[in-house]
Length: 483
Ligand code: BGC
Image (cartoon, rainbow, N blue to C red; front, side, top):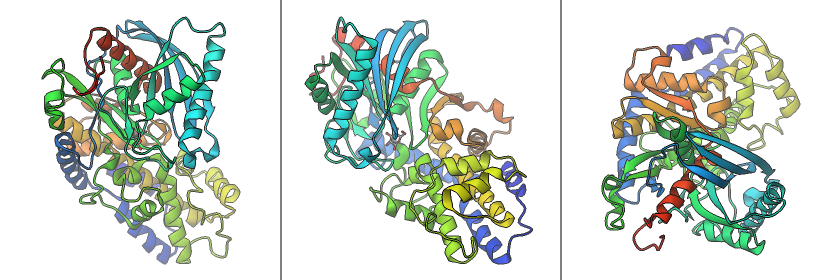
C-alpha cells in the first residue's frame, strides 16, 4: 500500500476546494483495497472455484478437454483464429518442435455494428476472412484439409474439445442467436458454404491457449491469464478433482489425467457476497447488456475502467464540483472513454499536463484547471490500482487451491501489457496476499508475459488433439463419439 500512497502524493490537493476534496476522499476510501480485504476475497474465491468443479455454479470452471501437457515437441502446420473485441486474427502457425515455432498472421477489423449483429453476420465475416487468408497464403490451393484451432474468448460449455455452447456473451457483446448454441457447427457450415478446406478440431478459450502456449516454451508455467477487455484464468487440474464430471468420463481418461480448466472467473461473486462494490460498479452493471453477470470482471477489466472514471466525473460534475459552466454533452455519453483514457493519463509524467489537457479538450470538449487535473490523475491511480489488486485474487486463489509455492502465471491482454503500473501493482498485491517480504522481482509466484496464446496455444492444442484422436483416445465425455 505504501507504493500506492506515494503515487497519489505526487498530485497535490493544495488547490482543490474543500467540497471537491471531501468528495474525492470518499472515492479514495471506497477504491482502496487493504491487504486484509484481498485475503478475505481470495479465501472466498477458493471456495467458489471448488464449487464450480463440484457442480454447476457461479464460476463455471469449464473442463477444456485439453488432456495432456504440451511437451514442446509438437510439430505441424495449424490454422488458428481468435475472435477478439475489435479484430478477428487469423494465424498460420508452424510448430517446429524443441519449443520452437514460427507464424504469420493477418487481422480483419470487425465491422462496428458486429457487437449487436445477428449470428449469420458473424459466421459469414469469419468465413470470408478465412477465405481471404487462405487464398493469400495458398495461392495454388491446399494439398490437404487444414486443422483449425478456434479461440473463442467467451464462456462456452464443452462436452468435448471440438464443441462449445455459448453460455452468454460478455465484454459488451450481444450478437443475436448465438447464446445457447454450439458455435463450432455454425462456423463449420459457413466454411463449407465456401468450400474451404478447413476442419475445426478444437475450440479454445484464450486463457487455455495462453496456458498451453506458454507451457510449450516455459515448463514453469502454472496458469494462463488474460487481463484485457475481459479477465479470466486457466490452469490444469486432474480429472478426479472435477467432481461434476464423475460418471461422464470415458475409461481412457483415468484418474491422474490432467485437464485444462477454463475458470471463467470473471463471474466470481455474482451473488455479491464479498466484493467491495461501489455505486459505480452497480451502475456499470445496470448499463451492460447482461446485468447481474461478470461482477468481478466489471470491476477490473479493460472494457470498464474508462467508464468507471467517467461515472465518477459525471457525479462530481452534477454536484457542481468540477468543470463549472462547461458543456457536459460528451461527458454524458456512456462508454465515450475507453480504458486508453486512464491509461494515457497515467502514462504522462507527474508535472506534465499536455496529455491530460488535450484528452479533455479534444475528446470531451472540456477545459480543465490544475486542481481538476490533480483529482483526475488521482482517480486514475485509484481505479487502476484497485483493478490490479483485485485482479490477482483469482491468481492467488488458484495457487492456494493447487498448493503452488512457486511458478509463472503467463499473462496477456491489453491491461497487462499496456496499462501503466499494472504489473507492479499486481505484484505488490500478490505480496500482500501471501505475506512475502522479498523484493517484488523475487516473488515466488510471478506474473510473466505470455507466449501468443491465440496462435501458438491454439496450434499446440490442435496438435495435442490430433495426436489423441490418432491414438484412438477420447477428447470428450463418454456419450460423445469423439474418436
Ligand atoms: C470471457 C472469457 C475470456 C476473458 C478474457 C471474458 O469476458 O468470458 O472467456 O477468457 O473475457 O478475454
